[in-house]
Image (tube, rainbow, N blue to C red):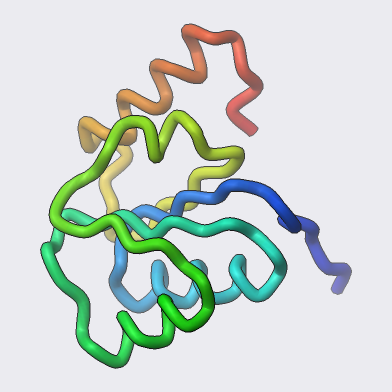
Length: 102
């Protein structure tokens, strides 16, 4: 298996359950500038500590549109519905700006 490069990229991970936390930690370990966004207002202390120690920024208690539209890569946790307003807004931005959305 070959690696992937996200070094220096702005990555937003949406959803702070088990998969989202794992994705954020993996991406941060590979050099990405990661923001983990979740509608929940708080995380378990252990998760919060691991994420902040890895340099992951936490956006809790709601989603900020600029966090989504300013990302080079958007990663959705399995439990996050793609029709959620923040996700739909990011997709509309990609479409409107003629970005690849890949």
